[in-house]
Image 1 (cartoon, rainbow, N blue to C red):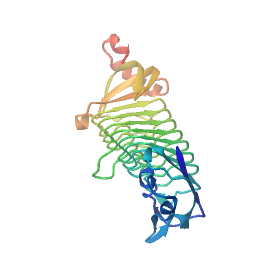
Image 2: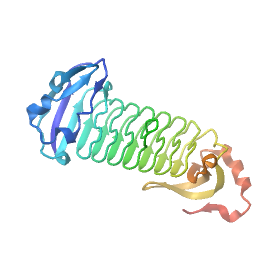
Image 3: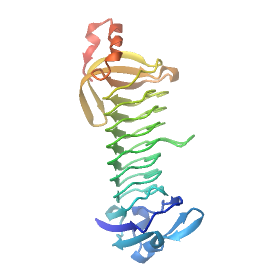
Image 4: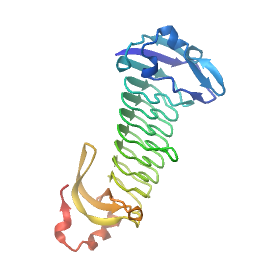
Length: 283
């Protein structure tokens, strides 16, 4: 894979529209043309080579184009917007809206990422080795949520993870804020850490698996049974899981699987089971 390296020249104080930084836009351009791409810094246009030291070789095909971004680019927004192929590697922290509307390819963030990571994502893979802020894989107000692709977060995420999610898979290895999976209608979420609560509020479909602790379950969810395993995407987990269905306020049929081992305070739900055969069922 051919690589273009963008090394940030210094701290950038004002927000920058980084949407032109994508394999789709770089592919087929000469090195000089890439240096001359304009980015909007605040309300002024700046050439790529005004903000970055540019090196490497361009490719004719987006599928063969890698972009390596060196430096802390938290002030840059929408890098990788609508990308369909190729690779973007952040060696530091990334800003807002990375991979917005992404259709394919791969984005790797070795540091932390800002809010709206993978918003309205359709395909591809985003991996963040640190943590991410709010509304990961979410929809803008009135817009469409994530419909495909995968997002993997090795650290924690903020509130409203995957709001209005319709498809795809999100794997969070750390903790999540409130309202993860709010309004989701499809797709799957795996959370290995803890949830601050209100998990799956207003969901109508899809699946959430929580391996950590949660303060309580919303009363609009119906306790169904105890399962011996749970799955989310291609991930399968063994153990005892309390399975809930809802959100009944929305006539929903979503599924939430909560680790019984990490949530002994929810053990009273087992007393609601009249048929012992409903305890510990396989998927």
